Image (cartoon, helix red, strand yellow):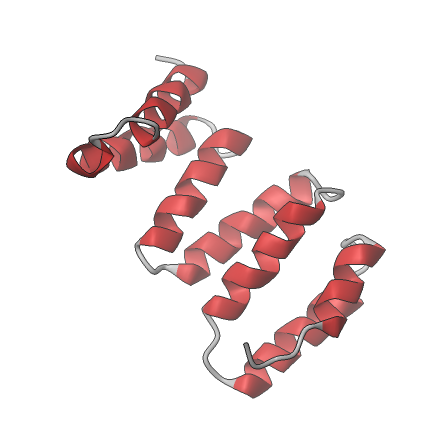
Length: 123
């Protein structure tokens, strides 16, 4: 089975009314797709969503960074990266440090760096 087929099957489960009853299958399909091709953007997006739903913001943020590195000019993906990482940081000082580091990261677009520097550390 190809990665695209696994991702398509997983996306079909997401769009089905009875998704809660099939959550285990969805997670299994997405994990297997990521094992076959860790660089597949659709599989990464689904896995990131699963991590976020499970409350694993660190893993979701790490995947968001991988996706952002592959699609550097995707502003929405950059905002998602900032949001997921901030959600996983509880201390204001650590949030501020993260935002300052993102604002100084030259691999990010000027728009994303400006967004990071303009965000308040307490959300």
